[in-house]
Image 1 (tube, rainbow, N blue to C red):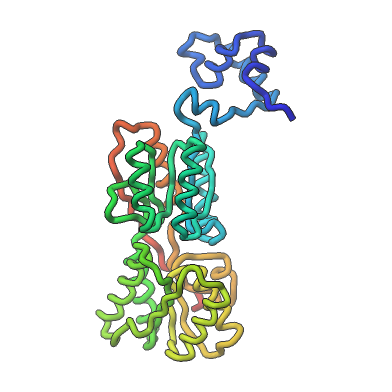
Image 2 (image 1 turned 90 degrees about the horizontal axis):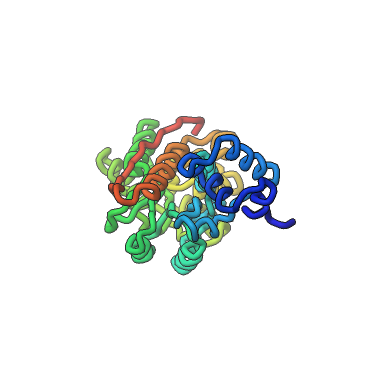
Amino acid sequence: MKLVSIKDIALKAGVSTTTVSFVLNGKAREKRISKELEENILAIANHLHYRPNPLARGLRTGQTETIALMVEDIANPFFSALARVVEDEAEKIGYTVIFSSTENDESRALKLIHGLKHRQMDGFLITPTPSLKEAIVALQKEERQVVLIDRFIPEIDISSVTVDNIEGSVKAARYLIEKGYKRIAMVTTLSDQVQMQERYLGFTKTLTEAGFEDPHDLILQIPFHISKKEAIVSILEFCEAKKPDAIFFATNYLGAYGLEAWRNQLHYPVGIVSFDDTDLFRLGRPSITVIAQPIELIAKESVTLLVNAIRNKEANPVRHIRLEPTLIIRET
């Protein structure tokens, strides 16, 4: 099907392409175009199902009204839920979102950034790894608008929207302590990402302050890139060796792996809390207690920060928004 152009609309309306361009770009009043003519042009554009070419518009205006969302793994329930709300919020103010997953891989992330720059993104929402520091600094130097989401890089002064990961882990540890558990373990990723380090710190600090001996002895760190099967085996071996009576999973996918390990091979009771909520944790039996992130608020704040930065480059102070996670108590 042939794409409808401004020329097609102009021919149908009997006006110049310049007049159509002014109307479609919201400049009818500024250019003294009558209300009747404006409405006629908009009606024709709608009837012909006209869709503007963002790249062509970008060449004219310097903006494509398109933003990039780069997350660790779009298949992860947390990031997929976040992406959905980001898309909804962006659409409300006329922006399109391009999604991509870095898979926590530096070379993949750099290729994505390079490709997205050439697609003329107006701005970037990025869940960064520490290895992306130089690439993000380069985006700043090119005056590209960037907001970090879910995590931040301490060495870079750049706007971010995160949750208080330390407080979330403190809440998880306190809950398990209050339930009377004595051998409280943590299963987390082997990662230098700031949000994972904060969850580790909040958890171990709370147990130490409560008088637990060497909480580090009951921590399993699983590499990000190992397979699901390998991760489940690691959890099984850890539990068989350490015999924890409660476990705090630092991410939702590790929590899901833990449930699979228990249901298939481990048969003694254990208390479970996971960072991040999913339908699996809410609807499964027993339902799982979680530290839930305010996904809608994270998305709304991120989109607002980024679009404000795009539209007001000259008056754009750096902001760090840190939101509070919630303990949702269920059957575990």
